[in-house]
Every structure is written in structure tokens, then in C-alpha cells.
Length: 302
Ligand code: SF4
Ligand code: SF4
Ligand code: SF4
View (cartoon, rainbow, N blue to C red):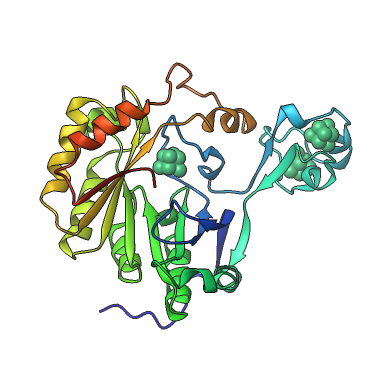
């Protein structure tokens, strides 16, 4: 048994907190988005969560070229893409239109706890609670564990949304404080995973095995990205992987959507999936039918 008496890290970088979420686990939830992710999914709809550090995002469509950001910057003439940008956020503070925004700031565990407890009254039915997501929460493992510990000690239902890539001991420590793990699977072929997502598949599968080994409650989540994750071979691999594990209660199929397109532009990154269209409702139903033996429940959506 692990000792949880002291907070492990009192602060970390969070880039968003969303209240009243209904797609990140059961019931009504507060979702806390940790910054930093080891994967590089080309469809990512939170690309501003990939870098571990706070950063400026710029929506060119909201910019009216007033020049206030350039005047406010004493370092790089307002060009936040340069290496010498100090990420001080002054340009965002003076931006009159909200075109510039500082994404990510340091939160203490106490701040997280207070934010989560604001909506406690709404959690009480249907296993609502807090979901730690990202980015990838395991990129800040000690802060994650401290946040889980703080919420658990208040009796709040805890969910961890993870891509599964992270230190095994930290994941298992976090899992002991977690009521439900949302485990995001994507491409179940080693070469394809490395090529498209920029990280090896094996540690992820080994971590999933370890969670199954300790009978962790798991919902698998599969983003349905046409041509990448919905191939017959990939779906057969998901079916095989999930069928043998009774603790995998549910499979959630998440249809591809295009919200990542503008977000990539806002952080000055190319979007490589421009030719992909969201799957039709009919296609989603077909995939759900194909995976129907993989878990007692297969749903479309969170
Ligand atoms: S974050 Fe600071 S250093 Fe970077 S562009 Fe803005 S004002 Fe300049
Ligand atoms: S302050 Fe905002 S609106 Fe003005 S130029 Fe800069 S980004 Fe554009
Ligand atoms: S794991 Fe999630 S946050 Fe990380 S790159 Fe992929 S979609 Fe984005």
C-alpha cells in the first residue's frame, strides 16, 4: 500500500478548467486540463495543451492590427513565435479583442481543490465528479497525484483521462486514487503508432495491462479518425484487446471533428489532416456494431 499523507507537488501547469462537462466520464463533471503531452496526434483538438509550458496563442481572425501587443513587448516586438519570447503574457493582457491569449498558468493543489468543490452539489447524482485530462496528466505525475489525493479526501469521484504514456509507477499510484480511468487508444500497430503519433505503442499497452492486472475500472476511448483508426485491422485489434478484460466496462467511440484546424493555426502549427472528413452517423453505427462484443457497452460519444 502506498502512503498518501503529504501532497507530492503543490503546483502544476493547467491550461483550462471546464465546469459542467458531461462527456468526460459519468454524471456532471469538472474537467481539469493539464499542460504537456508526449504524443503528437495529428487530429489533436487541444494542441495548445501539448507544450508543457504556458504559451501565447493568437487568433488572426480576431486581430485588428492595433499594435498594442508590439508596444507592450520589451523582448521580441510581440512575436511570440521567437525563441526569446519570455512568455510573460503582457501582450495578451493589453490585447483589446482577445486575439492574443496566454494559455496555461500555474495552479496550486488548493486552487484546484477549491475550483472542483464549487460544483460539488452537482456531482452527487450519477457519479459526477472531477476528471483530470489534458494534454496528458501523467506529464505532471506528482501534481496529478496530489490533486487526486486532495479531491479524494473531499469525497469527490475521480476520473483520469490518459493516453497511457507515462511512468508505470506513477500511473499505478494515480490509479489507486482514481475511481475510473478513461484510457484513450488510437492506432494499435507499432509502426503506425510511432509514425503518426510520434511515440511508441508498447509502453502504452504495457500500462494498460498493468491497470487491467489491478482490476481498475476502465472505459476505453477510441477517436474514430477515417483511414487511421477505423481500419478493419485496427478495429479487430481493439476488439481483441478489450474482449478479455472484464474491468473494461465500456468503449466510447469519439467521431473525428475539425475543431483542431483553427487551433493548430492559432499556435502556428500545420494541420496535416485537411483531407479527412468527419465519419457519418451510419459509419459510426457500423463501427459500434463491429465492436459490440468488446465490452458490455459500446457508445458513440464521450
Ligand atoms: S509573451 Fe511577453 S515576451 Fe512574448 S511576445 Fe508577449 S509580451 Fe513579448
Ligand atoms: S493587441 Fe491584439 S488586436 Fe492588437 S495587434 Fe496585437 S493581437 Fe492584434
Ligand atoms: S494524446 Fe490527446 S492531447 Fe496528446 S496529442 Fe493526442 S489528442 Fe492531443
